Length: 132
Image (cartoon, rainbow, N blue to C red; front, side, top):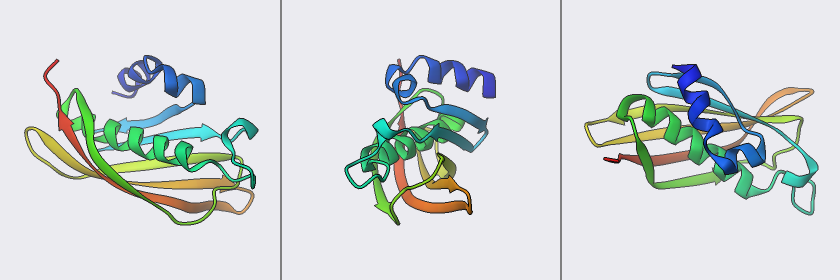
């Protein structure tokens, strides 16, 4: 399943531009990672909120896709817990509930640094199956 997920990620130009990597993809869960580069930061040196939001959104969609198949985000919200500083980011998502046409998923995004993982954002979203 992981190889299939990596193929899908490679077909996403924006994900490739950012340098995202799918590190786990199994039924009901997904994990994406991203190396922090200067180009992804804002003026204070923290990872830009848009990058964290992308990572959470894509990760919840991957976890939902593991149970729904082809799907898109219907809605999601994100809470930024603390500024993201470190060497890389890791997003971990799980499916909280799913039916035939939609899933509710959560994602926690961590910054990895010399002192280990620090929670930087939490997201909750609804993902809907698409018939394409």
